[in-house]
Length: 356
Image 1 (cartoon, one colour):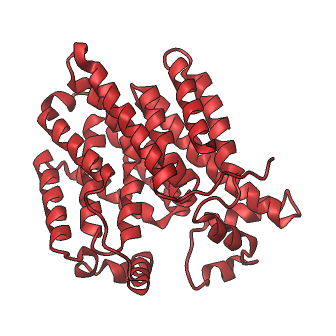
Image 2: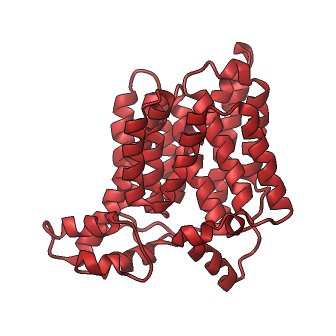
């Protein structure tokens, strides 16, 4: 019940402070969500891996860089920083978890406040899924995704220098952030929207006929993490990715609707950038689905952070008399993905916190 409670509290706060109290809501939500995710104990699948890695971190930077499985620099710098404050290893590890949660939550909520016209809807989209998947599981990717969401303003305003700086920062948290170069390059080239639709079709066909794009383009040779995912899939005999799961079906539905109203919608600030990134994320999901299930899903999640700003824009499609339908679509979708991730997916154990 703790997971449902934190969602409904967040939804209530964002709803009653939706208009003039967004700054107050922002502070309260950052406090609640950071505390909830940052003080958790072993309730998710990745916690034990992170805990052991941080607890037995290499003593020198040289040893860290020579480790058998490479990991991002911040995983070394954060615990080393907290060594100046705490003598206790457990306190250091807990501080690192709390820091990742704080940065991941803050970057996303600040982005929502700055770029979303529908604060409440964006908050429930975030807290019904990505908050749990990122801030409570893939914590490094969660921070990287939050930084990417902050960079949407840079893409909109074509501020290339600031975007590259944010990209480098995101890369220090998760190497998969290199994928964020794809939307930057495509937007810089100014591809017509129809090419993005072609990418979707190519991706779908590659998934349908099980064509491994990664090995064809030799990406498994270029990026070590890609090779690790592929070998892990072969070793664990991982099942094929379900390319028609609920989230993908909803993503495709909104693509169809937004594509139909594209000429009208592209005049709305941030829509064109967000929509094109969304098309890229679905295309990559299909293309990577034949390589490794974890890789394709986590890549989609990394990009899908834009959904918390994009999806509520569906309200602009409806006539003023029927805008309630757009609200209902987002609310129902949020409830379904919340129920699935908490009660169906069997990802999280009963919530526990070291604070109490």
